[in-house]
Amino acid sequence: AETAGRKDPLLPPTTMGLADNLKLGLLFALWYLGNYYYNIYNKTALNEAGGKEGPFAYTIATYQLAVGAVWALATWVTTINPITLGRQIMPKLSFADCKSVSVLAVWSAWAHLGSVLCMNAGSVAFGQIVKAAEPVFAATVNTVFYSKPPSMAKAMMLPIIVLGVAIACLKPDKEGNYKVDFEVAAVLAGSFANLAAAFKGSENARIMSAPGLKERIGSVGNQFALSQVFGFISLIPVMLFMEGGYFMDFIKLCKSNPVFLYNCTMSGVTFYAYNELSTMTIKHTSAVTASVANTAKRVIVIVGTAVALGKPLTFEEMVGSAVAISGVFMYSLADMLFGAKKDDKKKN
Image (cartoon, rainbow, N blue to C red; front, side, top):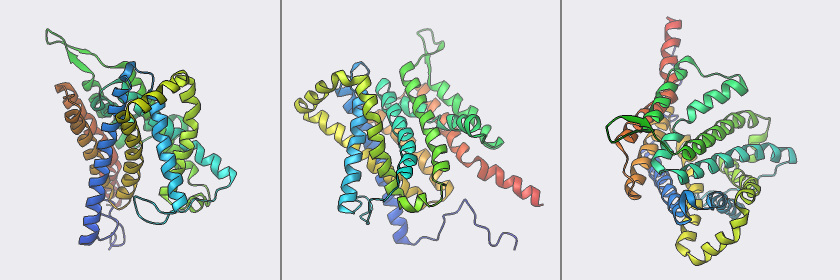
């Protein structure tokens, strides 16, 4: 009787019929497919632009958000969301609302920029392993800047994530002895992306709690669309400062190499699409399903892109990714599993 009215966080929020399950399965498939192809298009475009020696990484990251901004504006003009096929109207926000949303957009844009720079400096697989350490940065940011330290259960999982990334950085020499060997630029860029994502998450919780802001924005789709528009605007000065002198060369490359332009454009399209699909999917699943889904997505991206791009994982990267991703999975469920046991003991 004591637990009769209590919702189990491990179960889906509602009972779903066959049609709903089929729809959810399709959303999962499209989310994974979109994420996979984004990484392929993104890495291919970066390679065609010269890779880590090329001068266009900042420009490509900005171009991707430009594509997203055009997508958002087209959605508002037509009032139809091409992903959900539902109605989506441009929100009417005050200047203060726009300032608040732009803060989130800047953190989101910087997280995206860091990710692109990370993937440009190293392999997609290694970049994904570094990005798996995001919970470590989130815990640090929340503790230092927001006075919200993680629970003991979550904190105990953080060393596992760090260990996994560390293992992935190991390389054997000719004598079989291990040494730390990794792309410094990839680790720094990935860490920057994780730091920006951590601030974005914390600021999102703070800003979106403002009275009436969620209602004025209207939907998660509108919130993401706004982040693309404001994020694109925020990256323009960064891109011009870092690579402005090469901008006309970027235009020439787009004109002379239609494959490069196609990959740049499709990376922007798939980035927007998979992010919206992930939001739609997770919204209809339980916490456990969401955690499993995110874990599976990262595995699929790491393995799939390694095969597609002809960059097989080293043994150390395979072990490191398995450890890091397992740590992230346990981190996401730590409070639910260990916290629940603790609560039960208190009641008994």
